[in-house]
Image 1 (cartoon, rainbow, N blue to C red):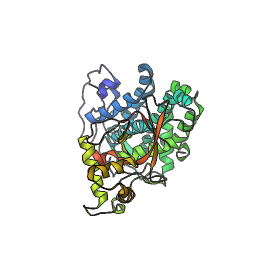
Image 2: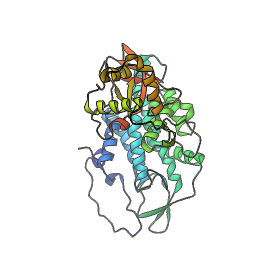
Image 3: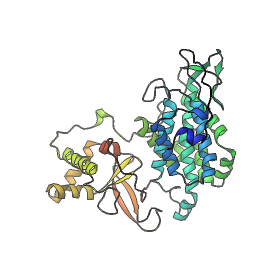
Image 4: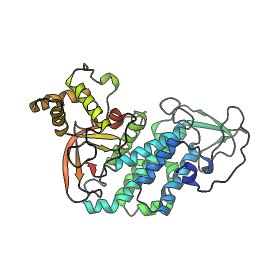
Length: 383
Protein backbone atom coordinates (compact mmCIF):
# COMPACT_ATOMS: atom_id res chain seq x y z
CA UNK A 1 0.00 0.00 0.00
CA UNK A 2 1.30 3.43 -0.92
CA UNK A 3 2.00 5.59 2.13
CA UNK A 4 3.92 8.79 2.68
CA UNK A 5 6.54 6.82 4.59
CA UNK A 6 6.98 4.22 1.88
CA UNK A 7 6.86 6.93 -0.77
CA UNK A 8 9.74 8.90 0.66
CA UNK A 9 11.63 6.26 2.68
CA UNK A 10 10.95 2.57 2.05
CA UNK A 11 12.63 1.58 5.36
CA UNK A 12 11.77 4.21 7.99
CA UNK A 13 14.00 4.42 11.03
CA UNK A 14 12.45 4.16 14.49
CA UNK A 15 12.95 7.30 16.49
CA UNK A 16 12.51 8.40 20.08
CA UNK A 17 9.54 10.70 20.51
CA UNK A 18 10.38 13.63 22.81
CA UNK A 19 7.86 15.22 25.12
CA UNK A 20 6.10 18.18 23.53
CA UNK A 21 5.38 21.28 25.64
CA UNK A 22 1.76 22.43 25.73
CA UNK A 23 0.90 24.68 22.82
CA UNK A 24 3.79 23.42 20.69
CA UNK A 25 3.94 21.10 17.68
CA UNK A 26 6.24 18.15 17.15
CA UNK A 27 8.54 18.74 14.14
CA UNK A 28 8.24 16.25 11.32
CA UNK A 29 11.19 15.11 9.25
CA UNK A 30 10.91 13.41 5.87
CA UNK A 31 10.99 10.06 7.69
CA UNK A 32 7.86 10.65 9.79
CA UNK A 33 5.58 12.87 7.74
CA UNK A 34 1.92 12.49 8.75
CA UNK A 35 0.24 9.91 6.51
CA UNK A 36 -3.49 9.98 5.80
CA UNK A 37 -5.41 7.96 3.21
CA UNK A 38 -6.26 11.19 1.39
CA UNK A 39 -2.63 12.29 1.15
CA UNK A 40 -1.70 8.86 -0.13
CA UNK A 41 -4.32 9.18 -2.86
CA UNK A 42 -3.07 12.61 -3.94
CA UNK A 43 0.50 11.29 -4.19
CA UNK A 44 -0.73 8.30 -6.17
CA UNK A 45 -2.19 10.70 -8.77
CA UNK A 46 1.27 12.24 -9.17
CA UNK A 47 2.95 8.86 -9.58
CA UNK A 48 0.32 7.64 -12.05
CA UNK A 49 0.61 10.77 -14.17
CA UNK A 50 4.39 10.62 -14.62
CA UNK A 51 6.27 8.92 -17.44
CA UNK A 52 9.68 9.49 -15.81
CA UNK A 53 11.78 6.40 -15.06
CA UNK A 54 11.65 5.38 -11.40
CA UNK A 55 15.08 6.74 -10.49
CA UNK A 56 14.44 10.05 -12.23
CA UNK A 57 11.00 10.31 -10.63
CA UNK A 58 12.64 9.93 -7.24
CA UNK A 59 15.20 12.67 -7.90
CA UNK A 60 12.99 15.12 -9.78
CA UNK A 61 9.68 14.77 -7.93
CA UNK A 62 9.92 12.67 -4.79
CA UNK A 63 12.85 14.45 -3.16
CA UNK A 64 11.61 18.01 -3.83
CA UNK A 65 8.13 17.05 -2.63
CA UNK A 66 9.55 15.73 0.63
CA UNK A 67 11.48 18.99 1.11
CA UNK A 68 8.30 21.02 0.59
CA UNK A 69 6.37 18.94 3.10
CA UNK A 70 9.17 19.27 5.66
CA UNK A 71 9.13 23.06 5.31
CA UNK A 72 5.33 23.22 5.52
CA UNK A 73 5.22 21.10 8.70
CA UNK A 74 1.79 21.47 10.41
CA UNK A 75 1.19 25.05 9.30
CA UNK A 76 -2.23 26.11 8.04
CA UNK A 77 -2.32 27.66 4.59
CA UNK A 78 -3.82 30.90 5.88
CA UNK A 79 -5.31 32.22 9.10
CA UNK A 80 -8.82 31.87 7.68
CA UNK A 81 -10.37 29.89 4.86
CA UNK A 82 -10.77 26.34 3.65
CA UNK A 83 -7.28 25.22 4.75
CA UNK A 84 -6.98 27.15 8.02
CA UNK A 85 -6.17 24.02 10.03
CA UNK A 86 -2.98 22.29 11.21
CA UNK A 87 -1.43 20.67 8.15
CA UNK A 88 -3.60 22.73 5.83
CA UNK A 89 -0.70 24.14 3.82
CA UNK A 90 0.60 20.67 2.94
CA UNK A 91 -2.90 19.39 2.20
CA UNK A 92 -3.51 22.35 -0.10
CA UNK A 93 -0.26 21.74 -1.96
CA UNK A 94 -0.87 18.02 -2.43
CA UNK A 95 -4.51 18.38 -3.48
CA UNK A 96 -3.89 21.19 -5.98
CA UNK A 97 -0.92 19.23 -7.36
CA UNK A 98 -3.18 16.21 -7.78
CA UNK A 99 -5.71 18.31 -9.71
CA UNK A 100 -3.03 20.02 -11.81
CA UNK A 101 -1.46 16.82 -13.15
CA UNK A 102 -4.91 15.44 -14.00
CA UNK A 103 -6.03 18.65 -15.69
CA UNK A 104 -2.79 18.74 -17.70
CA UNK A 105 -3.68 15.38 -19.26
CA UNK A 106 -6.43 17.19 -21.13
CA UNK A 107 -3.99 19.45 -22.98
CA UNK A 108 -1.43 18.86 -25.69
CA UNK A 109 1.58 20.96 -24.74
CA UNK A 110 3.02 23.21 -25.93
CA UNK A 111 -0.13 24.58 -27.61
CA UNK A 112 0.09 24.93 -31.37
CA UNK A 113 3.19 22.74 -31.80
CA UNK A 114 3.14 19.83 -34.27
CA UNK A 115 2.00 16.54 -32.71
CA UNK A 116 5.43 14.97 -32.95
CA UNK A 117 6.96 17.96 -31.12
CA UNK A 118 4.29 17.79 -28.41
CA UNK A 119 5.03 14.10 -27.93
CA UNK A 120 8.77 14.79 -27.66
CA UNK A 121 8.24 17.54 -25.06
CA UNK A 122 5.41 15.98 -23.04
CA UNK A 123 7.58 14.89 -20.09
CA UNK A 124 9.25 18.30 -19.83
CA UNK A 125 5.91 20.12 -19.80
CA UNK A 126 4.57 17.67 -17.22
CA UNK A 127 7.53 18.64 -15.05
CA UNK A 128 6.66 22.33 -15.50
CA UNK A 129 3.13 21.64 -14.25
CA UNK A 130 4.42 19.60 -11.30
CA UNK A 131 6.95 22.22 -10.18
CA UNK A 132 4.60 25.16 -10.70
CA UNK A 133 1.94 23.49 -8.54
CA UNK A 134 4.25 21.93 -5.96
CA UNK A 135 6.43 24.99 -5.34
CA UNK A 136 4.18 28.03 -5.66
CA UNK A 137 2.45 27.45 -2.26
CA UNK A 138 5.82 27.92 -0.54
CA UNK A 139 5.19 31.65 -0.69
CA UNK A 140 2.60 31.31 2.08
CA UNK A 141 5.41 30.48 4.51
CA UNK A 142 6.17 34.20 4.34
CA UNK A 143 3.09 34.81 6.51
CA UNK A 144 4.05 32.43 9.33
CA UNK A 145 6.22 33.43 12.31
CA UNK A 146 7.69 30.24 13.85
CA UNK A 147 9.14 30.17 17.35
CA UNK A 148 11.12 27.22 18.73
CA UNK A 149 10.77 25.87 22.26
CA UNK A 150 14.00 27.66 23.21
CA UNK A 151 12.48 31.01 22.25
CA UNK A 152 14.46 31.45 19.03
CA UNK A 153 12.81 32.07 15.69
CA UNK A 154 13.00 29.34 13.06
CA UNK A 155 13.20 30.33 9.42
CA UNK A 156 12.03 27.74 6.82
CA UNK A 157 14.94 27.22 4.45
CA UNK A 158 16.06 23.64 4.01
CA UNK A 159 15.26 21.39 6.95
CA UNK A 160 12.73 20.63 9.68
CA UNK A 161 12.65 22.66 12.91
CA UNK A 162 15.27 21.21 15.29
CA UNK A 163 12.85 21.13 18.25
CA UNK A 164 9.16 21.62 19.04
CA UNK A 165 7.71 24.84 17.72
CA UNK A 166 4.70 27.09 17.83
CA UNK A 167 3.59 29.64 15.27
CA UNK A 168 1.44 32.67 14.64
CA UNK A 169 0.49 34.54 11.53
CA UNK A 170 2.29 37.78 10.81
CA UNK A 171 0.48 40.71 9.23
CA UNK A 172 -0.51 39.69 5.71
CA UNK A 173 2.30 39.93 3.20
CA UNK A 174 1.80 41.44 -0.21
CA UNK A 175 1.49 39.24 -3.29
CA UNK A 176 4.92 40.43 -4.40
CA UNK A 177 6.52 39.44 -1.07
CA UNK A 178 4.95 36.01 -1.19
CA UNK A 179 6.03 35.42 -4.77
CA UNK A 180 9.59 36.57 -4.10
CA UNK A 181 9.90 34.42 -0.99
CA UNK A 182 8.34 31.44 -2.75
CA UNK A 183 10.63 31.83 -5.76
CA UNK A 184 13.68 31.93 -3.51
CA UNK A 185 12.68 28.67 -1.86
CA UNK A 186 11.62 27.07 -5.15
CA UNK A 187 14.95 27.53 -6.87
CA UNK A 188 16.69 26.10 -3.79
CA UNK A 189 14.53 22.98 -3.94
CA UNK A 190 14.53 22.16 -7.68
CA UNK A 191 17.45 19.77 -8.29
CA UNK A 192 20.26 21.22 -10.40
CA UNK A 193 20.05 18.11 -12.56
CA UNK A 194 16.41 18.86 -13.33
CA UNK A 195 17.19 22.48 -14.22
CA UNK A 196 19.88 21.35 -16.66
CA UNK A 197 17.51 18.83 -18.21
CA UNK A 198 14.68 21.36 -18.57
CA UNK A 199 17.06 23.84 -20.20
CA UNK A 200 17.01 21.52 -23.23
CA UNK A 201 13.37 22.60 -23.71
CA UNK A 202 13.59 26.43 -23.83
CA UNK A 203 9.85 27.13 -24.03
CA UNK A 204 9.06 24.83 -21.10
CA UNK A 205 11.92 26.21 -19.01
CA UNK A 206 10.87 29.79 -19.79
CA UNK A 207 7.28 29.03 -18.74
CA UNK A 208 8.43 27.59 -15.42
CA UNK A 209 10.78 30.53 -14.77
CA UNK A 210 8.05 33.06 -15.52
CA UNK A 211 5.52 31.29 -13.35
CA UNK A 212 7.73 30.83 -10.30
CA UNK A 213 8.98 34.42 -10.51
CA UNK A 214 5.48 35.88 -10.50
CA UNK A 215 4.75 36.51 -14.20
CA UNK A 216 1.99 33.95 -14.16
CA UNK A 217 -0.48 35.29 -16.68
CA UNK A 218 2.29 35.33 -19.27
CA UNK A 219 2.52 31.53 -19.11
CA UNK A 220 -0.84 31.04 -20.82
CA UNK A 221 -2.04 27.48 -20.50
CA UNK A 222 0.20 26.81 -17.46
CA UNK A 223 -1.52 29.64 -15.60
CA UNK A 224 -4.90 28.33 -16.71
CA UNK A 225 -4.18 24.85 -15.37
CA UNK A 226 -2.78 26.20 -12.09
CA UNK A 227 -5.70 28.55 -11.55
CA UNK A 228 -8.23 25.83 -12.23
CA UNK A 229 -6.49 23.38 -9.89
CA UNK A 230 -6.62 25.98 -7.13
CA UNK A 231 -10.28 26.69 -7.80
CA UNK A 232 -11.09 22.99 -7.58
CA UNK A 233 -9.11 22.73 -4.34
CA UNK A 234 -10.47 25.78 -2.52
CA UNK A 235 -13.33 27.19 -4.54
CA UNK A 236 -11.34 30.43 -4.81
CA UNK A 237 -9.04 32.12 -7.30
CA UNK A 238 -5.34 31.31 -7.37
CA UNK A 239 -4.29 34.70 -6.00
CA UNK A 240 -6.68 35.91 -3.32
CA UNK A 241 -5.07 39.29 -2.83
CA UNK A 242 -4.56 40.42 -6.41
CA UNK A 243 -6.52 40.60 -9.60
CA UNK A 244 -6.39 37.34 -11.55
CA UNK A 245 -8.33 35.38 -14.12
CA UNK A 246 -12.09 35.42 -14.27
CA UNK A 247 -13.88 32.94 -12.03
CA UNK A 248 -15.03 29.85 -13.86
CA UNK A 249 -18.05 29.34 -11.62
CA UNK A 250 -20.51 31.90 -10.38
CA UNK A 251 -21.10 32.59 -6.72
CA UNK A 252 -24.31 31.15 -5.28
CA UNK A 253 -25.95 34.57 -5.47
CA UNK A 254 -25.34 34.66 -9.24
CA UNK A 255 -26.88 31.27 -9.95
CA UNK A 256 -30.38 31.53 -11.36
CA UNK A 257 -33.00 29.73 -9.27
CA UNK A 258 -35.51 27.93 -11.47
CA UNK A 259 -38.65 26.06 -10.41
CA UNK A 260 -38.27 22.26 -10.03
CA UNK A 261 -40.45 21.58 -13.06
CA UNK A 262 -38.40 23.88 -15.27
CA UNK A 263 -37.01 21.97 -18.29
CA UNK A 264 -33.48 22.92 -17.24
CA UNK A 265 -33.86 21.29 -13.83
CA UNK A 266 -35.54 18.25 -15.37
CA UNK A 267 -32.63 17.91 -17.81
CA UNK A 268 -30.13 18.27 -14.97
CA UNK A 269 -31.79 15.57 -12.89
CA UNK A 270 -31.85 13.27 -15.93
CA UNK A 271 -28.12 13.89 -16.39
CA UNK A 272 -27.26 13.24 -12.72
CA UNK A 273 -29.39 10.10 -12.47
CA UNK A 274 -28.17 8.75 -15.80
CA UNK A 275 -24.49 9.28 -15.02
CA UNK A 276 -24.69 7.80 -11.53
CA UNK A 277 -26.55 4.73 -12.81
CA UNK A 278 -24.44 4.36 -15.99
CA UNK A 279 -27.59 4.70 -18.10
CA UNK A 280 -25.68 7.51 -19.79
CA UNK A 281 -22.48 6.17 -21.35
CA UNK A 282 -19.23 7.59 -19.95
CA UNK A 283 -15.87 7.75 -21.76
CA UNK A 284 -17.13 5.77 -24.76
CA UNK A 285 -16.22 6.48 -28.42
CA UNK A 286 -19.79 7.38 -29.44
CA UNK A 287 -22.89 8.85 -27.81
CA UNK A 288 -21.19 9.48 -24.50
CA UNK A 289 -20.20 12.06 -21.94
CA UNK A 290 -16.55 12.17 -20.86
CA UNK A 291 -14.53 12.79 -17.68
CA UNK A 292 -11.45 14.99 -17.82
CA UNK A 293 -9.49 16.73 -15.07
CA UNK A 294 -12.30 17.10 -12.53
CA UNK A 295 -14.95 17.93 -15.13
CA UNK A 296 -17.68 16.14 -17.03
CA UNK A 297 -17.67 17.08 -20.71
CA UNK A 298 -21.18 17.21 -22.23
CA UNK A 299 -21.02 17.07 -26.06
CA UNK A 300 -23.52 19.35 -27.73
CA UNK A 301 -25.97 18.95 -29.42
CA UNK A 302 -25.86 15.19 -28.69
CA UNK A 303 -26.60 15.42 -24.95
CA UNK A 304 -29.74 17.54 -25.52
CA UNK A 305 -31.01 15.33 -28.32
CA UNK A 306 -30.44 12.28 -26.14
CA UNK A 307 -32.49 13.80 -23.31
CA UNK A 308 -35.36 14.62 -25.64
CA UNK A 309 -35.24 11.10 -27.10
CA UNK A 310 -35.25 9.48 -23.64
CA UNK A 311 -38.09 11.62 -22.32
CA UNK A 312 -40.31 11.66 -25.41
CA UNK A 313 -39.70 15.30 -26.24
CA UNK A 314 -39.66 16.88 -29.66
CA UNK A 315 -36.24 17.33 -31.24
CA UNK A 316 -37.09 20.88 -32.26
CA UNK A 317 -37.15 21.76 -28.55
CA UNK A 318 -33.37 21.34 -28.42
CA UNK A 319 -32.49 25.07 -28.75
CA UNK A 320 -34.88 26.11 -25.97
CA UNK A 321 -33.63 23.28 -23.73
CA UNK A 322 -30.02 24.33 -24.27
CA UNK A 323 -30.83 27.92 -23.31
CA UNK A 324 -32.51 26.95 -20.03
CA UNK A 325 -29.59 24.64 -19.21
CA UNK A 326 -27.18 27.54 -19.67
CA UNK A 327 -29.31 29.64 -17.32
CA UNK A 328 -28.56 27.14 -14.56
CA UNK A 329 -24.92 28.26 -14.79
CA UNK A 330 -23.56 24.92 -13.66
CA UNK A 331 -21.01 24.87 -16.48
CA UNK A 332 -17.56 26.42 -16.68
CA UNK A 333 -17.22 29.68 -18.54
CA UNK A 334 -13.94 31.33 -19.46
CA UNK A 335 -13.89 33.26 -22.73
CA UNK A 336 -17.09 31.70 -24.00
CA UNK A 337 -19.81 29.22 -23.19
CA UNK A 338 -18.66 26.00 -24.85
CA UNK A 339 -15.30 24.28 -25.16
CA UNK A 340 -13.75 22.37 -28.06
CA UNK A 341 -12.26 18.92 -27.52
CA UNK A 342 -10.53 16.35 -29.70
CA UNK A 343 -11.55 12.74 -29.12
CA UNK A 344 -8.77 10.49 -30.40
CA UNK A 345 -9.10 6.88 -31.43
CA UNK A 346 -6.16 5.77 -29.25
CA UNK A 347 -4.85 6.63 -25.80
CA UNK A 348 -1.62 7.89 -27.37
CA UNK A 349 -3.70 10.79 -28.72
CA UNK A 350 -2.19 10.73 -32.18
CA UNK A 351 -3.68 10.04 -35.55
CA UNK A 352 -7.33 10.62 -36.32
CA UNK A 353 -9.73 12.34 -33.96
CA UNK A 354 -13.25 13.73 -33.83
CA UNK A 355 -13.80 17.39 -33.01
CA UNK A 356 -16.45 17.90 -30.33
CA UNK A 357 -18.00 21.02 -28.82
CA UNK A 358 -19.75 21.08 -25.50
CA UNK A 359 -19.89 22.08 -21.87
CA UNK A 360 -17.54 21.40 -18.95
CA UNK A 361 -19.41 20.78 -15.70
CA UNK A 362 -17.55 20.11 -12.41
CA UNK A 363 -17.84 16.38 -11.96
CA UNK A 364 -18.58 16.66 -8.23
CA UNK A 365 -21.80 18.51 -9.10
CA UNK A 366 -22.95 15.39 -10.94
CA UNK A 367 -21.42 12.49 -9.03
CA UNK A 368 -20.91 13.84 -5.50
CA UNK A 369 -19.11 10.87 -3.88
CA UNK A 370 -20.37 8.22 -6.33
CA UNK A 371 -17.76 8.64 -9.08
CA UNK A 372 -16.26 5.30 -10.10
CA UNK A 373 -14.81 6.23 -13.51
CA UNK A 374 -11.41 7.74 -14.34
CA UNK A 375 -10.57 10.39 -16.90
CA UNK A 376 -10.84 9.57 -20.58
CA UNK A 377 -7.22 9.41 -21.81
CA UNK A 378 -8.36 9.88 -25.42
CA UNK A 379 -9.95 13.31 -24.84
CA UNK A 380 -8.03 16.58 -25.12
CA UNK A 381 -9.34 20.08 -24.39
CA UNK A 382 -8.19 22.52 -27.07
CA UNK A 383 -7.01 25.87 -25.59
